[in-house]
Length: 330
Image (cartoon, rainbow, N blue to C red; front, side):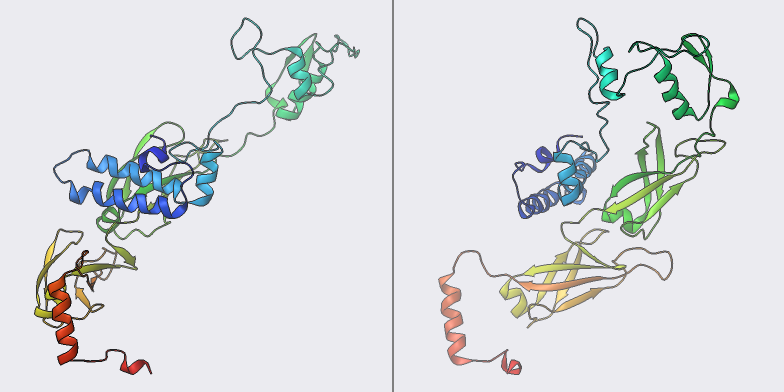
């Protein structure tokens, strides 16, 4: 995936508010619902969500800036610091002083029979290191060390691995299938159940790290990406619906987006800003009890530029029909 700063189009010095603002702006522009004829819309929107998952989280952003995780949020492997390539050779060569830096005292050489020499090029210390690694004593024959099956300590058991996955709100509402790449490089299809909640884990049996006679599981930790229009309230959704002053005064029908497509909502005459309408069954799916509802809250929006005619009308209205909506506030 591309650098998350490039995806969001913000500099590395951007603060949290600028990052959030950039995400919301691009989310509205790139959301699949607004680009239904574009087959790559979901891919671009997924890349945007992945970038915000890193830069929108302070800890993950610092880890990325330090180079500890990559653009997909996976840990980076930096190798063993201090190992240097030999002159004229590849980057993987070693020199005696490299070993000395990592294993103080060097490796002592043990002759057949057990005498200890002082040469830094010998193998005694290396055998001691291997004994510590494998839990066995090893059979020495000159400068080579052979190991028998009973020399090794018990191998570690299989371990679970955690894999992050970001899904859209629509996927959480309706379920579906997503392809995920595991740390071992294997691609698997993950079934997203209906009504999945943020932070929930999906366990894939036997897809973790192998061990002694067993294999661990893969735990898919799901994050639901923020939506440009909806906020989640349990199984319900909430949305602010902007209306004009004349729509609020005279009434009318306005289009309201839902996860299933836009619907028309009838606004009665004299509707105040803040009034909330309930659209039954337009929320999130859930395992039992049917889907939640969508609550649409009216927000009256005035023209961005001043309107002299409207101002004159309001002055006349104020003088002829005054009223006080704050009389109960004391």
